[in-house]
Length: 256
Length: 261
Image (cartoon, rainbow over all chains, first blue to last red; front, side, top):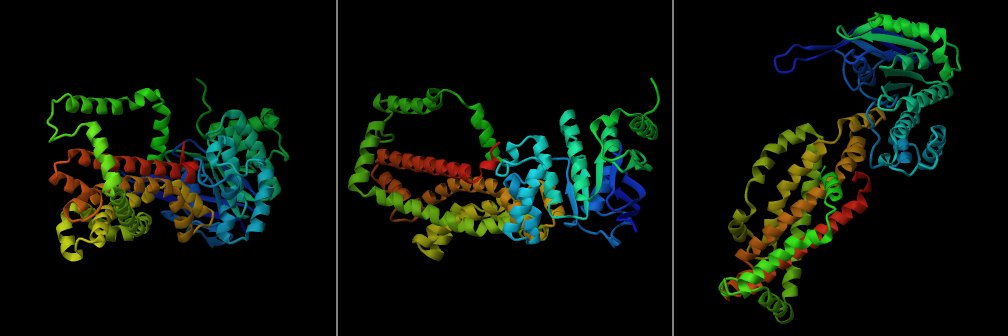
């Protein structure tokens, strides 16, 4: 049985002011195995964020169902952690308190919280910044903290919505590398939405390509590049072949 | 939101100190010129020197300090009562749609009822004692605070709430660990504004039926045509307002350093 099963899930938003209803996501079916790193790639308006919000339980599908470990998803819950594109650290909490938020909500006692937080602060390279507030951190550091906050209470599934979209190119590559390391160390199942082809191929064990209008899944295929991966893998022919395949399925293959 | 506003403005108005106070100086100079120069009758407007002299007499001989104390006590009492009632109601209204739907129409209506118009009624109900003064301030402040707090809480960033939901927070966690801390700086800012209005209500209440307080002194001075005392009373109110404002801002900066950009 797959970890996460998405069965015929669609989302139609009701019309706004006598307009047409918005088909944000056409019926989509997807099976994600345990310990998979699935990237969902597509242009804006392809429904990839909508799909992620449906899995998170922040929104309800119009048709179809979403099963996590065989149980239907209906509301947000701690077993599905999420990292958002916008910086959503709580600005009144320090880095350490932000990371500990979910643990406190779960009722984990303070000494144990401190131990786990300490471990994660080191893992994301933010030792010495525990008592900083989010506004004192760079964008990259904020997203690292957000990643730790989502991982720390051990969810079954991590959802990431273009988490590195606002970072500069080099910081982004650095973060991709760290993301792979954290994924391999933690053995989590991750669903990662992006609009970068490089990111989608580099991180993924499986890649789903969505197209806009109609907002539906065009392709879903495994990325069979060996692990561990280093950034220069992006210059290999195998990597290039995946990138070409994605360009083609997005209709971006033509010359001018 | 407003706290953030203040912070950005503080960066912009780095004018020289002399420029910042020049309007104040100009005001006193103009006042001195028309009164001491004899352009305005002393009966209607005292000059600054007379004002200072009469103010000194008020403080030393007529126990004006006690009046100031009484007025401050009334403002703080009525305002604190209003805040204690209004802040929790406002938070609940902002957080829960059904509560908002239930209370909002009444509070919006009540907000436009002028507190000063209640004074005759309140005198009938509560006499001219302290209860009446506190009630005037309470009525004048409570609905304003409820609505402003409700708006603040309702406008907390949606993505912060969603982040908390995906971290396993339920209703109580969302309220106590997201909505309240996120709106605390703006709530404090609301209280600072409303405290300023409370000063208007207390003086009106003291003008109409009172035997002590700054407003009472002002109305007594009118009978004696002591315009210097009246102006002194008004300036004392201004100075107290300025001090309380300063204390509030300082407190907010200490309490919510994270909210300053």
